[in-house]
Length: 252
Ligand SMILES: NC(=O)c1ccc[n+]([C@@H]2O[C@H](COP(=O)([O-])OP(=O)(O)OC[C@H]3O[C@@H](n4cnc5c(N)ncnc54)[C@H](OP(=O)(O)O)[C@@H]3O)[C@@H](O)[C@H]2O)c1
Image 1: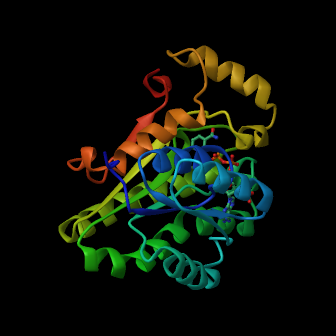
Image 2: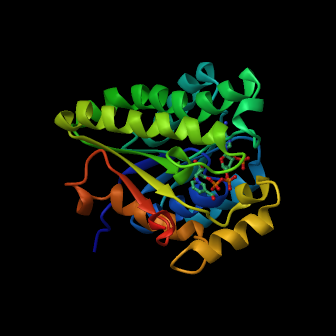
Image 3: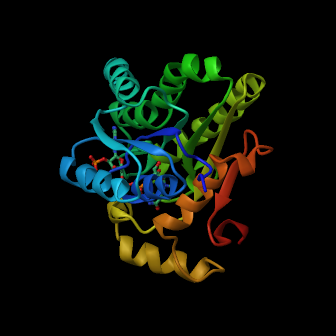
């Protein structure tokens, strides 16, 4: 029996750890070959690739700071040379300084906007010719609840995610007629290394657990399942949506 994503290639930014890694494994389970992008943690990227290959698909690692727009042409050239094409693009990598917005330095503001938002547009422009030629493709980016509500010290990322969500909607309308589907997935707190960047993260985590109807924070796999669905043919009628997967946190 062929799996739904058999023969497709997915490029996932920040796939060495956390949600990106869980997504890579979930897509591989559905038959996709995976291009594992990472920033600096080569060992973790290699381990992810090895775990992916155990599922019977291809995986290679690609170091690139996706916030460096000058580095993107080489990344896309290498991935395309290795796999032939890119059918699924997932922008998962994100960075940001944790501090009050009014204390942000301009270079800290730019860092989040470049990696979290601008890089997404630049990467979409890179995959477009290939997807347009095939008249199909799935593009997705990961957002967070901080895009539309106040989370202490989270402003740099939250603002960039708000712009990212808007970008998703604009791109979705423009690209759907070409057969290319763009969506987003947003989450509350997810148990990854990123969580530890929050000041007093243990207290913060306990607070979030208390306020979450599901009674826990998310695992990376909770998000990965939703992302995989949105990249699969089963979700073909979902276009330009930011699907919130947060155990009900945002309802309260
Ligand atoms: N964790 C949460 O609570 C949460 C909640 C909602 C949404 N999200 C979103 O989910 C996504 C993933 O978060 P996470 O918690 O899984 O993060 P994480 O565990 O900290 O992992 C970050 C990943 O991104 C890579 N990365 C960072 N900067 C990069 C860059 N400039 N270029 C290429 N790769 C880069 C890292 O590579 P290295 O291993 O090489 O460092 C790593 O693979 C982010 O967009 C985040 O905003 C997270």
